[in-house]
Length: 343
Image (spheres, rainbow, N blue to C red):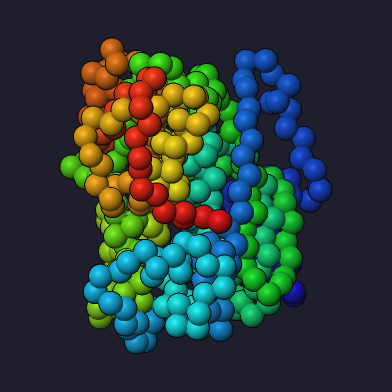
């Protein structure tokens, strides 16, 4: 049995599939007027978004990688900007995540887009390129990751394509149904407050912090704490995003605009300012690690000032913390130092 057939057979046995035999899928609920659907597509590609060593299923480095104690922007840019890292860089990032975690993150990034638009995910199309050197045990890990996310968010996988090639890649299309209004990014109003979510008694920056640890140590299990890789610990956000579905379901009626923080808070603020032709007046100076930490996938949203207390109560009830950044208006532009996380 070839890898593609093996992969599809495992999917069929997972319990998350629906009518995979056709090239197209009929979504009859789209005809109903009482539900509105949105669609999102994203890719997660080897040597662009992650690094792997397919001939070794163990993703922990046998030896630590040596980097200076203080990591400057040049070191970080080797991860965030360079499409062709040096041999040393490639070794340091080769096996940060397991195959199961890669599959989880590929789907969670897409689910985050759906949630931040005010919808719940319902259907998925997956086109995947399996690396030609992947073992059956590694393919099983991918299936486990896909199955885990699809079951957690009640997503039905209804089609896609499977191929083998020189690089592992996930190309995912998600369809979700709106639970209220569509939260466009360009719906910020003059006078709106801007806030973002985080873990309780925490803040943004854990993804940035984890990246620096990985760049410094690699993934040597004797040096790098296990909690920065694949757990529910606050430092594992880089590897395994935690999405704020409960908060979004209760708060969407109070929000004007919403998006997720994938490229860093400073970059997302600049996007909102540009799309809405408004300027944000920060209430306080934002720390560098808070501004620049990308791949956090927390919610960033605008709302009327009078709804702040109601949103704080919702945050408390969902074990979420919200941080008010500032207020939108016709102000003098404020400079935010940014890092480009994705090319």
